[in-house]
Image 1 (cartoon, rainbow, N blue to C red):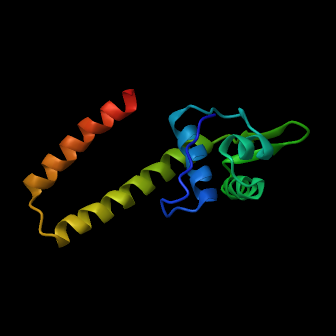
Image 2: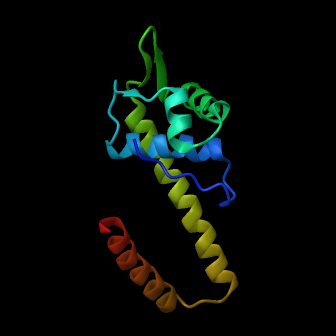
Length: 130
């Protein structure tokens, strides 16, 4: 499992862990029933406090995205993918609304905004590949 934590981006670390697990479930990188690394393993891999990972796991369990499998560990719950896809869409829509609001406040014209969007979409394709 590969996550990237950025302690200086303004998003709490536990929320970054939670989001990245949700995004992995939404994309199919982690499937229903699949066990995820233990709190200790993930904390060691990410070089963060185990309590931070435990908080992210609790948050995801409260949302019925993860479930404890007695004697085995923590796995992705049935129906989690649908919830994660919806959560990912909501998050991205909200972030785009914030960007569009700022663009409107700065009186950026639609054509210029579209050019920026198109250029950044192209840049993101390069980033994904490389």
